[in-house]
Length: 175
Image (cartoon, rainbow, N blue to C red; front, side, top):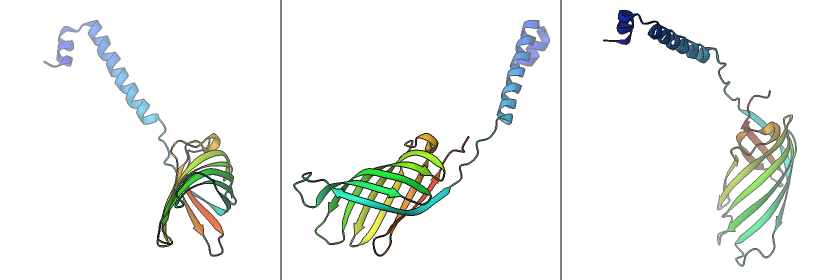
């Protein structure tokens, strides 16, 4: 026999109160779910501009001439007005135009009006002058108004050595 039939048969005031309480709790929970504001889907944004980079080899780090460690000092311009500081490890090969690098870079400045920092992870390979480069914002690395940033960066090197970036990113909605 189901609960409602048993309660109707005995008509216990305590049981009736329990049923009312449970019904109220279920209705309240359902209303809370329907009246809560849904989270807005993040919007993908782009920031672009030129940047200057100074790469400084670190002396005495390796006995192998094909392995090196370098420091990075960057100045971003355009939609990202910031400084980048980082460390890079490189590996050359016996084939000209082939090699690899990894780097970690902390970016500090203003991204389209929002101030803070975030960290970029670089992973690049070159196969006989054919580059493949992945640069990703390290998860949960954003601070200040850049807290929650996610994204990827593309770097272009034009003839003559001019560098530019395109940062595709999302950020939580500003309060």
